[in-house]
Length: 393
Image (cartoon, rainbow, N blue to C red; front, side, top):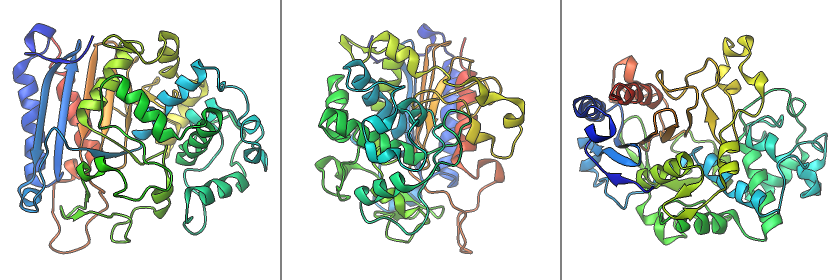
């Protein structure tokens, strides 16, 4: 099955409720809580809602949303990377439970000899999120420093979100395949006809690829565009300039909907088999049962213990990070710049939410002021998802 447009009622959704969800999104964009937004909802391979909204202040700066628009998706890059990894597993180039040090010997230093690819993809390797110390000057330097960094806990005993782990995964893929993650990703995504999803190539500058002219800048809380967010004007961690697999991917709402539908189809999109059903199903299973213990669910850093699958997050027993009404089978991922994709096999549902903002609090007296309940995109994403689930008939 491929995605096709449809009226909501034939696939069991309320048109009036979806219209209410769309109106909510337009209201928060017009209010200035978001600079702009693109939303897409599909059920049963039928797109029942696809709208775009731009705040007037942003439109005055010359920005619009079109079918060519590409977003920086930040950590939504992680499940995209995991798709490439699972293809390498199927091709026999690596195995999830063979220690990474057997492929990258220098990674095995200071107690990391038992860390596996499964640990890295499920955030249970014992690595921190970002490297300590001054910013690296290249991806190679970043990796060298990761190799020298000890673990903070024994692999497989707990969970802690780690963007660095995915940089090791990207290097692992390069070594076992002989190709860069960016090349493998382009090949995989183009196989199902999507051309707006890319990994940032190692050493690539912001304008090195032709498709980058379609990538939106990030907007601050005052709705001001920053074409180069790494120039020090915004509070973005400088290490992200050298990250490929953990947070510098780009995509579009339409492309992410195809990825979500492919996962619902157990690795198939149209007549193209991207992953075997076995790989697709293993990707969205919780990898370690200890991730949802009561003490972790009530801790102040409970997000760090969110149930992890392979690249994806899953609902788990008690934490509804993607939306209040999603089923126990739902899986999802979000990014620091406001992108989110949520897939729910229970209801044959795909939700995509795209924006482009770095939502640190504004400090100037002239900053955009919004009510507390819409003061960050995670709250808005949750309400939107709840309204979409409310449209199920």
